[in-house]
Amino acid sequence: MKLNQQPMIQQWSLWNLKSLTLQFFNILNAFLYRLEDNCKLNLRNEDPMDYPFEEMQKDIIWNCMLVATTWSFGAVLDKELRRMFEEQFGPYRNVFNITFSTPMKQRFTLFEIFFDVERLTWALISDKLDYKIKVHFNADMNTVVLPTNEISQAYFLSDYLIYALGKEKDLNKNIRLVGPQSSSKTVFLNTFEKKLPTPMTTISIPMTAYLTMEKLKQKIEEKYISKRKNTLTPLDPNKRIVLVIDDIHLQRNLKIEVLEFIRAWTICRGYFDVASGYFKKVGEFGTIMAENSNYIATSGKKDRFAFHTSTLYCEEISIESSKPFIQTWFTTSSWSTSTLITKYYILITNALDKLLK
Image (cartoon, helix red, strand yellow):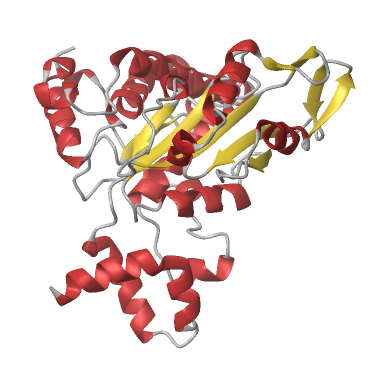
């Protein structure tokens, strides 16, 4: 890959070619699973052109591969490196048939569009209704704060990966949001947990100093039921289990290896319960995490779970993205200052500081 030969990309902390190759296939499989389901739904169409899979088969496969490449190798890069990614793609643009169902009046990057397998056409992520994020779990706040591109992209990627849960045996449908403070990572986790795109049961794992291995297992097993002595199944068999972990960077300072435990669980499809004296098998699950890229741990511990995780780098919210929020905050009489500051004090402080400068 020419991209891998670029010195700036090689030095990027989130760049791991082997891990990103694995994530490429995970994301490609997730798209193909949804494509397969949509093909089955359209088998009985009277007019084949309502869903012209046969006529577009070659373009469909190429387009899915392009999306998988963008959201595996490209998703871990920051804005500057993403521009380099776009430049490397330039000579191959004509190979792909990137067409939209409606005329596009604006320029776009590969990170702003996706191939919609439900309609067999390209679309803007921010324009798709499912990914117009309800920015906060408090529905009233949605009228005040506008979604950022990063949140919409995170929803898009999470939706496809979680959809693939239960479609195959591997329990490696994990997504990690990495970025500096004030890049909407926690907002995304809260929103995703409260307003899920598909039927799911979430388990929030608190990264606190009081967390022990027994408390961790107890927290997870609350959503499971013992089908047999050594086999756990979700309480609701129609819902998928999703672990939600905020501030995973704090695990480096804990006495227990939270992510290493989940990694072993993922690979072995369960874990050995020392107290019970037998191996416990579990069903399919996924993991959604957020990590502060600027956090410096007091220990030198590194986790291996990131190797199995699709990573999305989130930029700090810019002043341009903050303007609508600040303008609404100054002019509205519907919200108390204390409520807004409590929820978005980082965003407000950064935006006001830049406005004053």
